[in-house]
Length: 76
Image 1 (cartoon, rainbow, N blue to C red):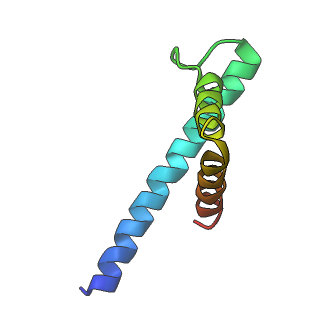
Image 2: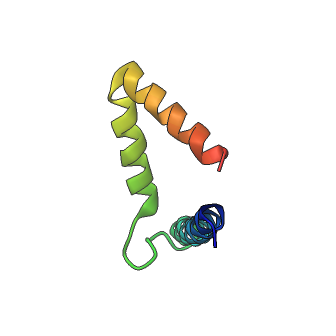
């Protein structure tokens, strides 16, 4: 077992966890839209809006950080 295969395995596990989390966020957003309340009492839309507003409240620096994070997310 070499280091490349170990990092490959870790990457696969993290990718799987990320996929599950994205699916849960999607289900939560759909349940909020359809039923009007958050899934398990969690309002994901409000939380996402708060995160984006905190980046945008940082001015140009916050906007640049948000753009960089979104580009990293897209390149996964």
